[in-house]
Length: 304
Image (cartoon, rainbow, N blue to C red; front, side, top):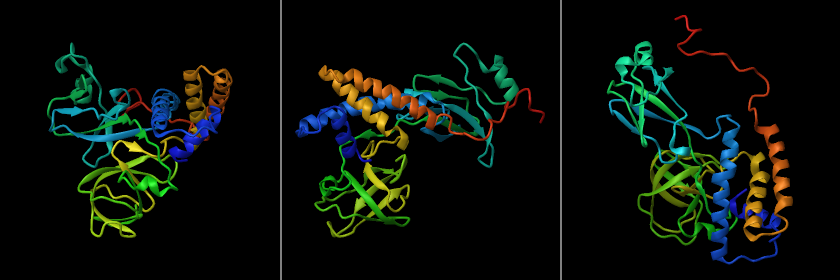
């Protein structure tokens, strides 16, 4: 479901299906949609504690500091793991507050690795040369109005569909009217649910402009056929499980009805609550069959 389809569904639920919205009002609708996405839908999914949106980056501790990524939810980390020489997780890395020095840190004496301190948006550790996996929950891209069936959505260099790719060139769906693109940043969005962000690249179009298909060169992550390219930070598809679609629609409609003081607000809120109960049955837990393994990293059950 692209965001144009999402908007149509929200209008139906908000009893606005017969209203033709001007561009300025569509923009206002998407402000409400994104507020609902970031402040209701994403927290609801994360509340299941089933590792949705889990992402990681590698910190080379030859650099004593690591900036928490700007797209980390809450500007916090999920966990830190010391990697061995093969890139496998060796053990968790702990945190310490400013009042605790490594000399008196029981964790540091037992783990042989200094604990990490967090100040503002930066992680600090003494230089040691090891690598640490920094795990965090990544906030999905902002939603923009996009209709994948309309050529008009491709005419402003905002989005492309990948036909094929090699290690350095892309074949893109002909976007029609096109201006020259030179080293412009795009995010790679999967073409299927949950429409996750797969990476990023820098794109440069090649002559002739408007060819069918359009050829471009790129640096960065290599997309797959049928992937979407959207300008950095935005997307035309909500990065959520398919089962969350109706909840998202109802949450947006509820926000709009509440803003307008409409009598239908209470009814839609009740539908939303019932849908959340259904969603929980489908998404939580993610493992329906096997029991969780009891582990105790470097603790009571570690006999090595």
